[in-house]
Image 1 (cartoon, one colour):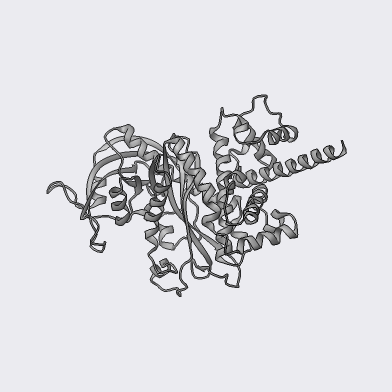
Image 2: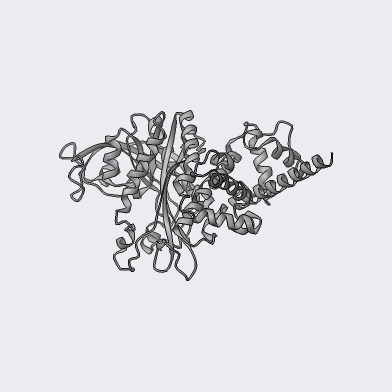
Length: 467
C-alpha cells in the first residue's frame, strides 16, 4: 500500500527515485523501528541518510505521487471534507539540530500544517493528504509575550497558513468539491473572507466574539450573544471524545479545557444567519462585512464538575433543515480524524524518535511518515467500517495466504477487509476483548506480516533455484 503511494516519484535522477521507493518499502514494513533497524543493514542505512540529507530530495518532491493519488480518490468520491490542522514535532537532545526552532522554553522542533481529505459519506475514511507545509520558528528568546513564539523564520504570520493550505487543497481537486473543516485557530477574518470570495465551502469553529451588523435594534451585535439567543432547532446526543492532561499545553488552556472522559452528551442545537464586520486591525482590502451561517451546540446536563460541551460553528453550508444542520455537525466531527492521523505519525511511526540532525533531513523523513501514517490510519478505519469489502482490497493475495497460515484463529473462506485487518492486529498482540486495535498493535502486526512475507518470498526463491 505504501509503496504504491510513492510509485512514479521523480527526484530528477532514476537511481534517487528508486532509492525513495526502496526506503518507503522498508519503512512501511517496520514503522516504529529505529532507522538502522528498519533498513536492515549498514549499507542501506547509510544510503537512507545520504538520501534524506541530499539537497536534490525535498518534502514536496517525495510527496507529489501521494498528493496526486489523493486528488484522484477525492475526485472519484465527488465530495470530501478537507480537514486542516497543525501539530508540533519535538526532538530531544542537548545539541541543537540544524534548522530547528523553539517550541517552548526548552524544546526544539518544527511545526507542520496539513490538509487531510476525509470521505463525506459518514464513514470518515481517510483519503490522503492534499497539502502540507512545515516550518521552524525563529530563535527569539522566551518572553512574556507568547506571540513572540509565533513568528516563522521568514518573518511571516503563522495564521496565514490556514488560507494557504485551503487554497492549495482546492487547487489539487478542481473536478470535485471540498468542504474545508478546521478548529478554533482557523477563525481568522482573512481566511473566512477568502473562502467566501473563492466560493469555497467550509465549517470552522469560532474563537473570536466578533462584532456583527444587527438585523434591528433588538438584535445582538456580538457573535457569542447571537449564538446564545438563537432559537433552538432540536436536541440530539453526540459522542464527546476524552481529553487528556495536555502536558505541553499552556496553563491557561489547561484551565479552559480541562481533562475529561468520553461520554454521550445531550446538546441543544440552534442556528441562524449573521453578518460579520471586518475587524479594526484587518487589512482594508478585505470586505467590510461578510454574510455567514452559524450553528451553536450546547450541552444541557453536563456531569458534575465538568464544563458543558459547547461548539459554535461558522459555515457556508445551508442550515434551513435539521438534515442540513446535522450534515454540518458531521463535517465538524470529521475533524477528529486528523487528530488520529497525528497520533499515527507520533505513536504508530515514532517520528519524534528518529535520529536525524537537520530540518531538511527531518522534513524529507516526514514525507515517508505521512504516507505510512495514512496507511495505518486507513487500516484502523477499515477495521471498523469495511464490514463487507473483500480482504483483497487491503492485502495482496500473498499477504492473505500468509495471514491464513499464521493467524491463531482460522479465517473464513470469503474473508472481509475488517476480519483480515483484525487478524493483522492480532499478530501485533491485540486481544479481541480489548476493543478496537491501537496504533502500536497495528504497527507491530503489520511489521510481522511483512517479515513473514519476506521469508515466504525467500523460501519461494530458494525452491525455484533448486528446481
